Amino acid sequence: MLHDKLRLAEDIMTGPRLFPPQEDNALTAGTLVMTLDGPLPVEYLGPGDLVFTSDGSIAPLLELRCTICVTAVVCVARGAFGANRPDRSITLPASQTLHLSGPPAQNAVGRDTAQLAVGHLMDGRRVVDHGCKPVTLYALIFERRHFVQAHGLALAASAAPTVAA
Image 1: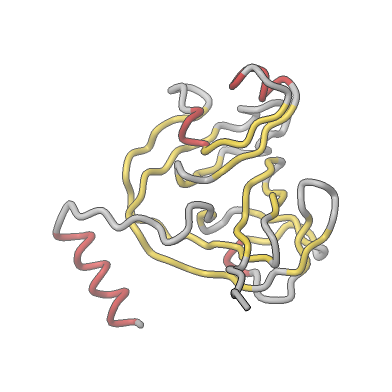
Image 2 (image 1 turned 90 degrees about the horizontal axis):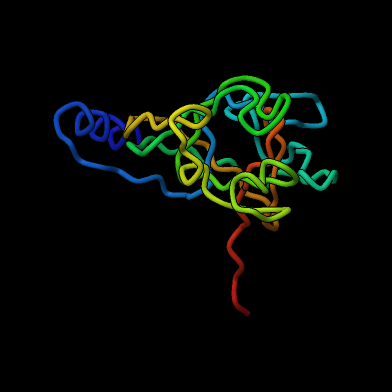
């Protein structure tokens, strides 16, 4: 495993190869996720931690998957989607799905609610393209798909794969 990470790091440093993330919805290190114990950096979470979802429920985390990759990232400015949404500037993979409602959704897509990749909201001011960069991403895996609360935003998390009987 460590050998693979070192090889990947060497490839990142020596060539323009793109290593896409293994999950479409994954958070960058340092993203604060709301848990029953308060906001915690995503990289500190583990199986069994109780995470607040955007519908107000609490879901137990089944798995935290970590991947090192080169992917398109965007910077979302503080307040880009309303007061304290997010509560500070954050960096996210452009593929990260965001749930918007109210005026931010109306402004983005002309509907009351929307779920779309944050990269589709780039405007050069509130959501800024930062190109392809090497990042460490953390995918939160739950029993079913949820939108977790992080920095005042509702960010998609993945569901565990179902096994056919």
